[in-house]
Figure: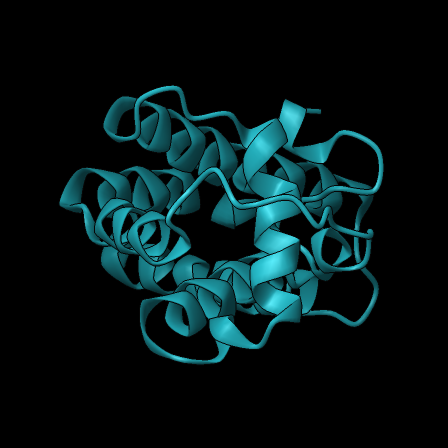
Length: 152
């Protein structure tokens, strides 16, 4: 597990939105943080990193109702890759960035309703889609079909 998954705080799932936040002033400009995250997510190197991961692991997935244990392991690795990328880039761009400080502020930002528009909404929707196991499995099955079609 990464630091982003400490306790009930899972950066890529709705669990991050359920713990109680602080009432202190925010240390980060959340709109700027979401702009940075959007830039990270749209980075061609990040996109290629995800595609490479998909190509390397998609053959493990089969189109059947029952899920293998390895699917969960692969999904966790995928989420960890995303978490590490975003946290690393945030730390590069925002001086003194700390995920431990950011997560409670993220909760407060979301609870205030401010995350329902712009980059914040786009980023949160995308992060939640990556965290959703069934969406991940469908993506891996689609990747598998593309890989096998390219081989034929």
